[in-house]
Image 1 (cartoon, rainbow, N blue to C red):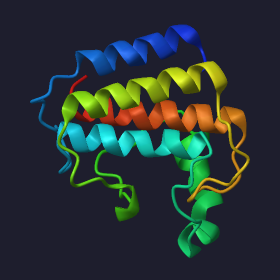
Image 2 (cartoon, rainbow, N blue to C red):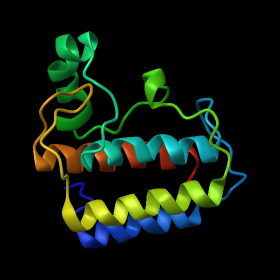
Image 3 (cartoon, rainbow, N blue to C red):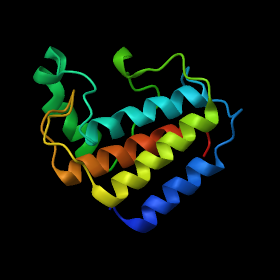
Image 4 (tube, rainbow, N blue to C red):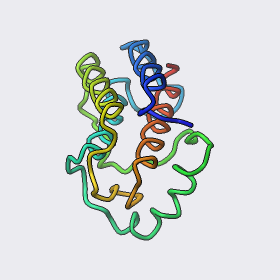
Length: 148
């Protein structure tokens, strides 16, 4: 099972983050490496209980259906999946700071799991296993995007 709570898989993900090069270019999409790292930190902030954004109408209407495709499915996220602009960080440019922050978030999640009972801004109510799987798949998606 895909899991950042599993210490071995968490360590593997951290190793992949450490292997990422500052000048890595995306195989798909428009993000720079620092922007991708900042973007990947946002779901970890949501899982930690930090207010990220309120649940919008699209999420209320389609979030549970999309959960089956994005979280419950074994398939990896597809290339060029749409991203809500609220989850983009266009000004991110300090690669080392962004990577360090994301590694801290990955390690903290591995130790504590999700620390929120708030609904996900798009998918709605998630279990501990849902959060774990979502964060693993999302981070894996973006590391593959940059060849790491």
